[in-house]
Image (cartoon, rainbow, N blue to C red; front, top):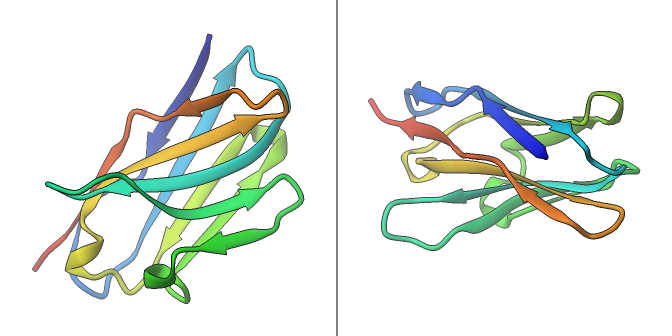
Length: 116
């Protein structure tokens, strides 16, 4: 059984920052790819940022320069540092990982609300 536990969401004012964390535990093979997705009310879930085991990163255009994804392989943990937050960043954020056997796992989601 594999569990992904997310933390760090909350309410923040526009221009503020939050840091999300997602730790994987349980019977999991070596993690290959880790990513963050988000789903705003009434919209489909969308990919936000991803990072390979070797540390290569990619970002959705709307978050480039504001978000930073990172990981600690020894802890099976991925982070998302979010700066200069905007109201349109409001969503439930989900972590995602794929192991070297291509099994994929999702976190339970954490709410991020950007509002004054």
